[in-house]
Image (cartoon, rainbow, N blue to C red; front, top):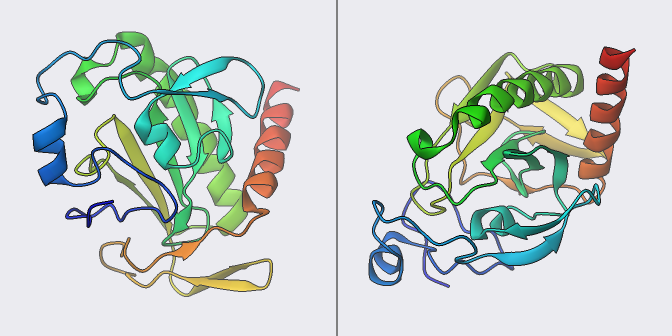
Length: 200
C-alpha cells in the first residue's frame, strides 16, 4: 500500500488501488472518465440485510458493511474507523460518481435526510459545539463527506477519552484513534431509537 499523500490517512488493514495520487494517476481512469458499473467493486451484504450490494472501494475502505449505521438508495452513513473526534462519521454516495455534480437529483434530496439524521444523532451523543463536513476525495475518489463533530475539551466512550486536538481550528485527521469495537452498535441503536421516535 502506498504512502498516503493527501489529508485522508490510509486505514490500517485495508487496501486501496487508488491509495495515493501517484497510483491514482497511473492506474485509475481519468477523473472525467465514466466508469462502468462494478469497476473496483466488491460483494458485501449490508448490516441491515436490505440488499446484496456491490460496494465500491471507498465504501469498503471505510469499513462497509461493518461500520454501516444507515443505508438508503443513494447514500450510506458509516462510522469512521479512525476517530479524530468521538462520533466521526462518513457519508458516502453509493454510486460510482467521482464528482459531486454527477450525482442524480434524487441523491441530493436523500442527502438532506441523512444530514438531519447524522446531526441529530451526534448532537445527542457527543453534544458537539460545531460540526465540520469535509469533502476531500484526494485519496478515496468516490463522492463522500467526512462528518466531524467538534468540541472544546474531551468526550469519552467505553473508558476511552477522545480530545478534539484541533479545536478551535481545523480538525486534525492525522491525530485519530481507532473506533472502539462497540461504538458502531451504540450509534446504530441510538439512531434506530431516534428515527423510531420521529415516526411515532
